[in-house]
Each structure stands twice: as structure tokens, then as C-alpha cells.
Length: 86
Image (cartoon, rainbow, N blue to C red; front, side, top):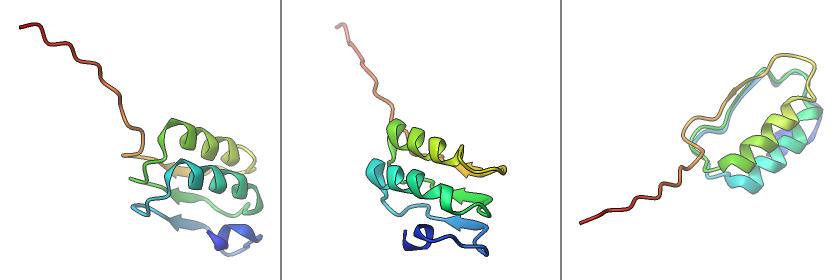
């Protein structure tokens, strides 16, 4: 995540898929997104970031003045309550 801490004029695409980032890491990425205005593509697939992490990344992405292609597939876990009547 060091690459996101500094303003980077050449970074346009970043793939962090399958890196076990989790919700705390996603929140950190969300906080750091504003310093990279050239970032256009961010892949965070299958990192277990959950709904809170996804919201943090989305909030950070809103600070960018350009369109960000954000991929969050396989992150939000679903909670199912199943009742079996026998």
C-alpha cells in the first residue's frame, strides 16, 4: 500500500486482488485514494473487505475528479438464516 501513500502521476491501474486486505485495509485504501488522481482502475477482488470496507473505498473514490473503474467482486459475505422444519 506504500504506492498509494504518495502522489503518483504514473500510476493508472492497480490490481490488489486476492491479497487478504480485509475491511481495515480497505478503509486505509479509501483514505489514500485522494492522493492519486491519475488512478483509473482499482481491482480489489476477493479480499474479504465486506460492506464497511467497500463503503470506505467508495467514499475515498468519490474524492477523485475522474472516473474510477472499481472492481469489488467476491468481497461481501452474505449472512443467511435458514430454519429447517422436520
